[in-house]
Image (cartoon, one colour):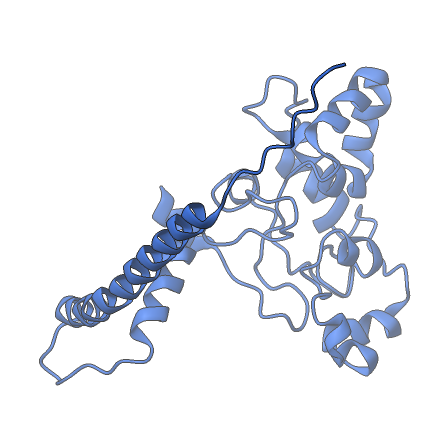
Length: 249
């Protein structure tokens, strides 16, 4: 099951509209806030989940669609995403800032090419969804088909969408950490010969790292021992000076 989910994920390169990525379904207003809104006015909350794409897929997505939560409305994610976003006949799909402005964002032109705005792109949620929904591929029109894929399994899986700050579903965190660790210790080394397998190469890497570790450990122990001796000497040289006692008359 986990491998099947990973195979269906597609990472965003930071340039252009979405193309096969799945937006995460989380409560970006926090589940507590969404729950209070639902308790305050259940009818209005239901209406927004069904008719307001920004509310349903950005602000309180999990509270609208999560099938595992006892407090969620458990609405049909696939049907509502089709009506509000992917069906050109019913979707409300436009760029709030205009097509020319959003085209610069998508193609990283003008000031979008500077380092100051490097973290703002079509994967930035809720910014891109609200400002450049059409150009970034979050919805469909008669001329443009949505690049985003609204897959409930991916969007609601805590392994791929465990952080409200992430707009799109990514590979599980454990796999990314392992890959980062593997690159860190193998990128600067070369396989000794063509017959060495990957397992032997990793063993060679570990042995080289372990060979360097005793020297560092000895330095730490020596520094700690010297600090302990210095602290004892300071205690010996310290004397308590009691104030003189003045006899009462």
